[in-house]
Amino acid sequence: MNYLAEAGVVSKDNPLRTSAHTYFIQNTNGELKIADPNKIPREYIKTEVVETIDKKALRNDVIAKKVQIDGVSVESKTRVSRR
Image (cartoon, rainbow, N blue to C red):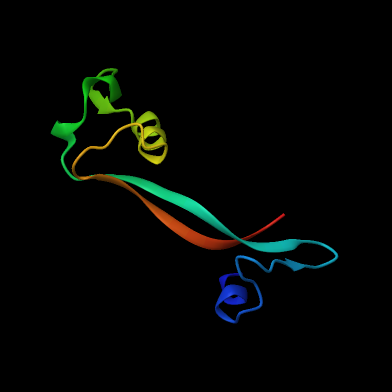
């Protein structure tokens, strides 16, 4: 589907509508990357049998720009999607 954008058939302002689907450009967020787990605040640490980072909550807060931590980022991607 990304070929549609590379070929110029789909652009941000020009979706492609067919009888079955609509192809459009959409920004998505990638996985959470943590360079140094020791810099993560305690509120994102879950304690089970072993201590782990609450990546789901941290990822959501990084995307919402509620928290900024050195070495932690979520890559933003642009891709073609359909409905």
